[in-house]
Amino acid sequence: MSLRSALLLAGVVLAALNLRPAIAGVSPLLDEIMRDVGLSPAAGGAITTVMVVCLGVFGPVTPLLARRLGLDRTLFAGLLVIAAGVVLRGLGGVPMLYLGSALAATAIAVMNVSMPAIVKQHFPTRVNLLTGVYVAAVVGGAASASALVIPLEHGTGFGWRGVSALLAVPALLAALIWLPQAARKQQEVQSGPRPFGQVLRSRVTWYVTALMGLQSLTFYVMLAWLPTIFIEAGLPADQAGYLLSLTNLVQVVTSLAVPVLAGRRPSQVPYVVGAGVLTVFGYLGMLLAPTTVPWFWMIVLGIGQGASFALALLIIALRPADPTAVTALSAVAQSVGYVVAALGPLAFGFLRQVSGGWSVPLLAGLAVVVVQLGAGWLAGRPATLG
Image 1: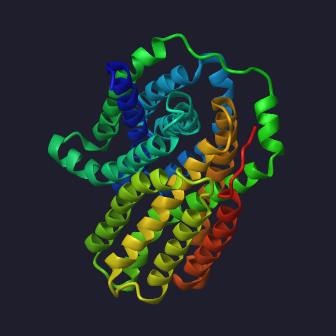
Image 2: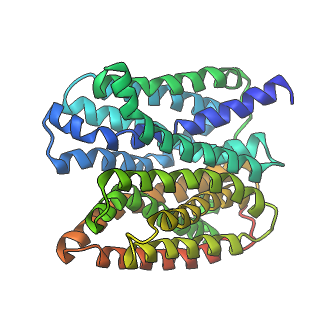
């Protein structure tokens, strides 16, 4: 492997590692943040909600930026804006907290949409392998942030503001590694609305969008509520936290392996359906026997969720014929998908409140996964978009 190829691969991995810490790093520090700036629980929870909404709302600007700047420079700019956002949210009171969070999430939205197209552009013969690598890095970044922010806070004595600023370091490091690529002459990108027009008229787009949105909804519901479900079932709080970490770590391995296998076949239907079935079993375990081998249910759920996320992004990269169309499909699928996902934790909490338990929310989650299975069946069939 040449030095340029090694730097390109390292840049992709490091950029992907920065796509979740700004979001996942909020939850462990949330109690301290609320006390420090005087937020209610609802206002504290709104920090994550605002960021997930930004993932959906600002994704569609990516094709415009890619036409103006090129994909590589768009990714470079996104890394710098993430660094600015995580620093900004620790500099003042409530307005800076929300503004910095929204700024970082906007950059993540643009990078989310860019990554499948960058993989298609730079690694056209290894889309399945590189999709697995970068998705594993995304999931690994989320798991690392959740696990390390508290030890970092205790080890440095910086408090939540300093720890938030430290999240800028990996973003700046990734930008430094990506700088030679951004400085190169950018590949010409087609102009005009044709790629978006093609994508919006295709049924494949809406199958992929449904798969992306529904699997994202399941992920964010579990991220928000899984420890609480186990605590209310009778498990200690620390064990409930370990179970969330376990299911996230399992997703790292699954995200790396599944695209390599699924990308070799013209149809991804068996893999998408298998991932959905495993997610159903994870839900059933939490519903029927949450305190009986909970670690087993979390492994099953992690395999299902990790595979579903990786397959959704793999299909986005495989279906279009060129990077321009990949960017357009990615913008539609991820923008709509994350708006749908942002509603999940709120709806889950509302169902818990009105029903007085977790049976109704978990049954609703099962229904969502069943619909996801249908969308995955349609999205996973062989097709070429554009």
